[in-house]
Amino acid sequence: MLRYSLFFLLFLLVAVAPAHAAETFDFVIIQPGQPGTSEDAQPVMDSLAAYIQEKLGGEVAVHGRYFNRVKDADAYLADNHPRWGIVQLGYFLGRGEASCMTPLAATRPGGSESDMWRMLVVKGGPDEWQSAKGTVYGTMLFQPDVAARLLFGKGAGDLPFSLEGTFRPLRALRSVLRGKATGVILDQPQYDAVQSLPQSDDLKVLQASDPLPTSAVVAFGPTAEIHDRLRGILQDMQNDPAAADLLQLLQTEGFGPADSRLETMRENGA
Image (tube, rainbow, N blue to C red; front, side, top):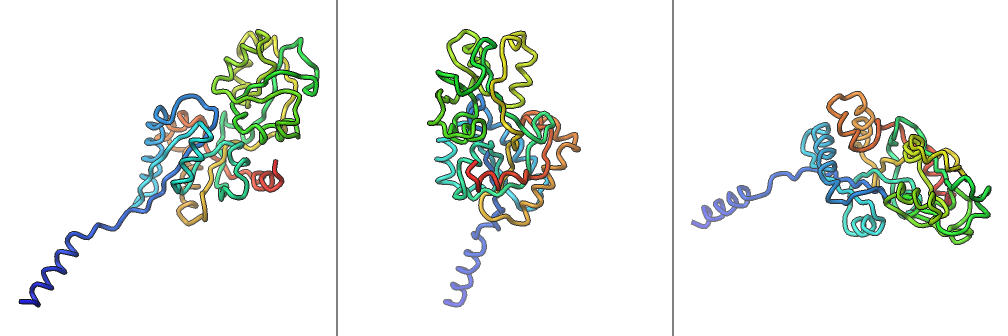
């Protein structure tokens, strides 16, 4: 009787044991200053997750989250452990070596391999940034020290004007034109968009950065074979008609090799 009881118990344990769990390959997209909310962007995250999961095949589960506020991204990463992500340049540089982010690939916004930041002021304004006063706005200014070093070679506290992050750079631009703000800093896609506006004739570039890396695809923590597969999937997306709409939602024309400057810039505190 005992023999059969033990056999029956073993059968129950095997029967109710969970199936082999899928490998999780979750990601985050961190773009401080971009419009919308995490909830607004979730359908895009779900679409990207489904695409990557299908391409990886097998027992791999992919989920994604989006953050456009630094504090929300920091809070999430403090309690969660995504395997990879797409992060804005300022966020990558602002986290230093402690971030454990390893570049895997690079985005191609507008098809470009690099970005550039420009400080715009009204044409009748100062002729050099050292003479500017007041407040300067920009989406990248949620990491003010990083932005200040990249654009001016100084810390934010050493500038003659204050830097303030904004989710609405075009509204900030109108404030500049009305004399209610000193300037606005635009990245390359934002600058290109402004060139089509008639108000662009009333503005001038006061300071421009060197060519900068675009938002990077990174691995969080040690890389593995699955990250190599991810790199290949991302770089093939521009040739996949099924990915065309998704790339448009991600605001990139595709993905290229990781920018070799990123690690050096982080090590040098740039």
